[in-house]
Length: 238
Image 1 (cartoon, rainbow, N blue to C red):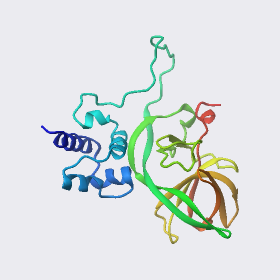
Image 2 (cartoon, rainbow, N blue to C red; image 1 turned 60 degrees about the horizontal axis):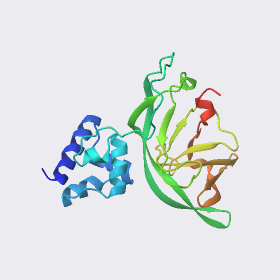
Image 3 (spheres, helix red, strand yellow; image 1 turned 180 degrees about the vertical axis):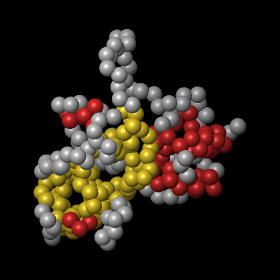
């Protein structure tokens, strides 16, 4: 069987297991609905970058998608001293990782300047996978995680890095935050911003991104939720 046919056979297998459609998985990979449809029509394999992201979302290796034997994504960490004897059992994997996709940039008028701001498409009803819940989040039923898209917060967050949110803890000035946005006063969340909170008032949020460096304001009427990203010390119980 040729590589292209193997790719679509294995893709269909994982889509059936996860309950995702061609459109849904395309949105998670590129932020647009047509990646898999166009690949099927052209009988072609997605580009290496899209293939890698597709494999990450499906929790398999690119090698397996193309016909290899390695199913799971290999860990880059090697334990060389033998097994570790942890006394406590880890909590079960019930913390959802919600769907995101790169949303490109939007131009936001801030003062007298136009600022290009990187945004992320948000799929709050799409759960990519479940991960082990840190003990510090045991009582937080609304906690969730997402994969960071884009490079606007690099080096604080790099593309593909995971951010964990505990909605119980109110954000403070200087915190890294996830801002869930709506349009025209609707309740539907259309996009999110992953930025640093600089200032807030009844009428606006002032946010900061690092790459390219910029500060800008968002009309408070567009902000449906403002969630603090948990620092590693919080997740470890520090």
